[in-house]
Amino acid sequence: MEAIALPLSGLPKRLVDEGILIEEHAQDALSQANQSNTPFVAHLVANGLASSTDIALAASSHFGTPVLDLSAFDTELFPKDVVDIKLIRMHHTIPLFKRENRLYIAVSDPTNLRALDELTFHTGISTQAILVEEDKLSETIAKFLEQDEDQMLDLDGFDDADLDGLDIGATQEEEDKDDKSEEVDEAPIVRFINKVLLDAIKMGASDIHFEPYEKIYRVRFRTDGILHERTRPPQNIAARITVRLKVMSQMDISERRVPQDGRIKLKLTRTRSIDFRVNTLPTLWGEKIVLRILDPTSAQMGIDSLGYEPDQKELFMKALHRPQGMILVTGPTGSGKTVSLYTGLNILNNDERNISTAEDPVEINLEGINQVNMNYKVGLDFAEALRAFLRQDPDIIMVGEIRDIITAEVAIKAAQTGHLVLSTLHTNSAAETLTRLRNMGVPAFNIATSVSLIIAQRLARKLCEHCKEPVTIPEETLIEEGFHTEDLADLALYDAIGCDKCNKGYKGRVGIYEVVPISPELAKIIMSDGNSIQIAEQAHNVEGYNNLRQSGLLKIRQGITTLKEINRITKD
Image (cartoon, rainbow, N blue to C red; front, side):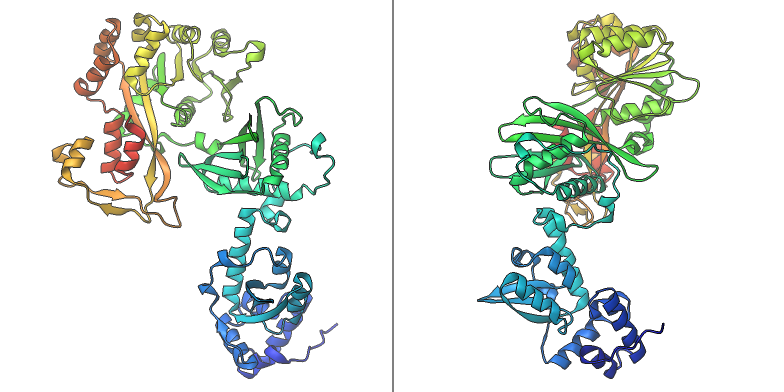
């Protein structure tokens, strides 16, 4: 059946009269807008039938009202609690300000009387339309709604296809005993948590913190090693957020007195999923929950992307391809040790080698590698797993961390009997790693003959390529910081500025490494019970291997990071 042409009047007729639209297009647009329940002007602009400016000028002339420049308004100052979010979405309008007993509403189509009537009915306040351009109205509404979602003013209003399609595999949520009296729709909580998880992944965060306090509840992301506050949901929904996260993590929602551990698997696509390692901690004002984001793609990074200098990479690769010995990666928590170990394992992983790892916990699944999760409740610790590995015909063994003399002795025995062993220690430098093993009680001879390479590392934030700017620092200061006089002639330094493509001037991180092979001279110092100062003197001043500070200064000379950042991670 042929559609009946609607009579043109008001703004559509004006647009035709001024030659902005031809009558046929105006008729079609009016019909389609009515069928889709979309404002006429929004339909025209969305489909490219007319420009926002032409429509606004025609409407201004027709109705005798000026056009307001909406871009001059700060969305933070809009009245947020006056109009329901659903009405803003439905009628494509937004309240600008309230004066006396009148609410002024931004509209791109003054003939949209239905919107004004409904806003008046729901708010109990008389309304007055203010004409604005359609493209600026759409942009402003989107920005306003984004702020609203971040502040959790109306969770139920959030509508995002990504959130609906998330595959998290959570079990059916049970109501806590204390919450049974409250009948609350949990869909907004589910959507909010899904949005937080997606935002964290998009921003490249490594951790998400859900933190309850006496008067606030906040969510923070750790991005590039620095924590930043992301949002503050209403405090009265804190308990429901906690329950939801515990259900997703397969935890006991009735247990609030002790810490719990769990995992969440979020399937983004058919080929990509992200794991979250979850821990709860009872605090004074409720349970704090921290999610560690475990992205398998980080374990697939090539060694060239980690930040090793060419000579350091060569030393690492040489040690990896030795038939036996021990490679130790050291540094504080969050310094990238796990990624370094996984990168090495991926290089070695093939059908000819039997690789086994003991981890606490297993962070990322590596296909082709036998990964064992520690379970202290049943007596499965690092030492016990290592003993089992030695009966499993291993080629390569990875131990998550050497924490005690028993684990150290078994690992060294494995390294001395024809196996390549990779592990970590929490020490600050290569020299301190060797003395730490000695202090544990490992005989000096065993250290000197089993350890083949030590890598101490940190992660430094990289400068944003879009906004970094040259900076001048006095030569006296640079020399005090460790630069050599001959380096100052062509030295170009940069400072972090900040733009919309980065996080306060930084984007991403790069490794800073101290790579020290155990040479015969270093072995002699170890055998004679030399201290960390003597070991460092031999490694850096005699044999010429860069320490962490020197490697950091090299990254500054390369324009990768700033002096301030290197001072943050390498100065005591």
